[in-house]
Amino acid sequence: GQMTVNVLLEADNSAAYSSAVSLFGAMRQASPFFELEVMSRLFAFFFELYKADLVRPHKVNRQDANITRVSELLDWLEDNLVEPITLARLSKMAGLNEKYFCRVFKEVTGKTFTDYLNGLRIDHACRMLLYEKTSVTEAALHSGFSDMSYFSKVFKKQKGRPPRQWVKNK
Image 1 (cartoon, helix red, strand yellow):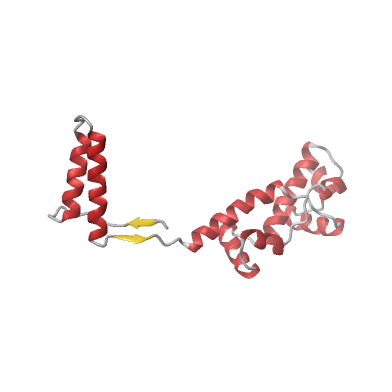
Image 2 (cartoon, one colour):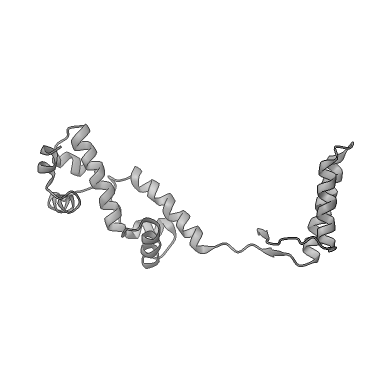
């Protein structure tokens, strides 16, 4: 596994400090075969760190790992808006149970899973309506909404007016 060295070497006469001084000295001198000398002093330095019990097994921060997982899924979401996306599916992809996934998701995005997904889908629909001049039905379907009344409800909630009125005012 990974190891962590989390130590500030004081300018004392410890073997680890002396070894570090020796290592940096060898790195400054470009004597013949200095690479071998640097390597041998590097090994000696690590030996002193281990001997002084200054190296510990690295603990993976579970929270950071989960945030990374959710961040990767956000990219996947943007590329797969049209697919049927459920909380169950995404939490399974993240390897987390649904309740915990929801908590981590909200920490990362500041929104619930449903609000975030609907926001992406509505923004995508708006781009289609404005730039591709598609119909409201087509924009809804190509943004992952299969229910038109739900699309209209979410659209109005996010944009302040129904889709057709929103397009007219743009």
